[in-house]
Length: 383
Image 1 (cartoon, rainbow, N blue to C red):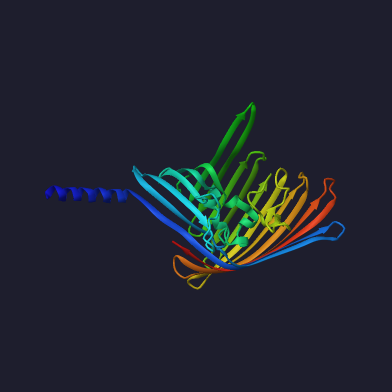
Image 2 (cartoon, rainbow, N blue to C red):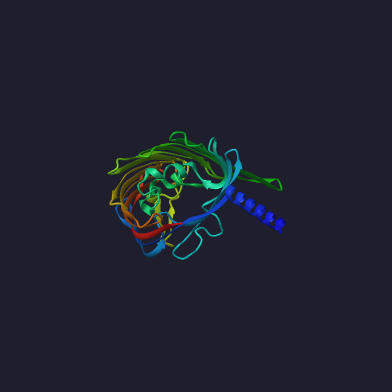
C-alpha cells in the first residue's frame, strides 16, 4: 500500500515537472466578411481609339480582410540556463467555405523549429516570415492587412513575405532596439546523361527597429534570386508616433529588378478568365517607389477609426514592353472591439492607376487605366 502511494506521488511530481517545463498552445484567428469589389480596366490605343474595357464585380461573403483566417500550434520547452526549444506550425484557411488557403500545403503560414534565450535572442529554421514581417506592421494604420487598404497593395510582399528553407536570427530587445537577419539558401544540381539542371534560390532579409510605448521606427532590406531570374532588391523605411488623440504613420520603399508580390497598379484583368495577374514586364530593369501616409484615432473606449493614402510610381525601360505606371489608393476604416478577442470592422478603399506602355522604339503604344473599389464589413475573433 505504501509503495503504491509512493509510486503515485512520484508519478504526479514528474508529470507536474514536465508540464511546467514544456507547453503547447493552440492559437488562431477566424475572420469572415461580407464585401463588394469592383475592378475596371480600360485600354486606349495611342491614337485615342478604345481598345478594350473589362469590368468585374464581386458581392458576397468572403474570407476576412482584417487579417485572414488561420490556426496554429506553438510550443516551447525549457532546456535550462535560460534556453528554450520552440516551434510553430501555422495554416491559413478560408472561413467562408472551410477550404485550405493553399492547396497541397499543410502549413503555409509558419513551420519552423529553433532555440531562444533572453540574453542572446532566437535562432529558427524552416518556413517563416522575413524580418519585415515582424518589424513593419506598425507603419500602417491598417496593420498591412485589410485587403486593398493594406500596405501590401503598393509595397507587395516586401513588408510581409514568407520564405521556405530559411535560417533566421532575431536579437533580444535592447532597451527598445532590435535587429534580425534571415538567410535563404537552396541550391540543387542534377546531371542526366551529361546534361545538368540547376535550382538556385538564395536570398537575405535584414531589419532594424526601435520602439517605445509611443514611437516606432523600422528599416528593412531583402534581396532574392530564384532559378532563371535576376536578383531582386527591396528596402523600406517607416515609423509611427502616438499623440494619444491620434497616431500618425508613414513609410517609403523601393524595389529593383523585380516585384516582391502582386501590386495593385500592375494588375491587369485577363478577359479570358477574369483572373488578375501581374503584367509581363516584371523583371530586370524594373524600378519602383512606394509610399504611405496614415492616421488612426480612438473613438470612445473601444473604437478606432483609420485613414491612409498610398502611392506608387514604377517603370521598366528595358523590358520587351517598356512601361510607366502610377497609382493612388485612398482608404478609410473603423474597428470596434466587442471584447479583448472579438471585433467588428468595416472599411472602404478606392484606387486608380495608369499604365503607359511603349514600343521598343520608345513610341507610346497604349494606355491602360485601372480603377478598383473594395468595401467590406466583417467580424474577427482571436483564440
